[in-house]
Image (cartoon, rainbow, N blue to C red; front, top):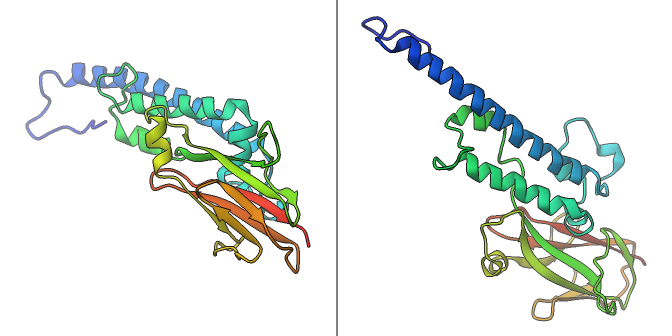
Length: 228
């Protein structure tokens, strides 16, 4: 808010306008606090999942998005997707002038870092021989000859997208831990069937990363540990 006195002295409505601004500020502060509560729920959901980095590299302030398995949160925590949608829907309302939850102060919204959690590419990985297609937890120990199904591609956390819009831009690729393309001599991915096949044993224990890619969403990774 701007409390400075303009050139020419006080306007006749100076104090009534300030009173009105303070009332608006109070309401908007409560709305910001509400969305921060929603954001904390999302953080808590992520923190409850498996660590995906070396515990020695965990430090105060590191985002749970960078340290914990988003894949496990999507597939193994029933609260995560619901909490993320609630969080994003409230942000949309805060940015909608027609909404009762509209917040006019951009500095308020910026200080709350409301874009910290975007929507995610959702998918699940299951053993292809699993009749029930149960989602495997992150960092599954596999071996030569195993075949996995990548399915249920979707955007997680955005209730405004139709299923077709959500899945059309998601691509799946196989990566090494350093982000380069994984050796096709060891594993292959068939985009038409959604099958990842382990076709030969590596010379040393190796981590294969199944990675999603979508222009508008945060990528999700799933790790397969391939034994020698």
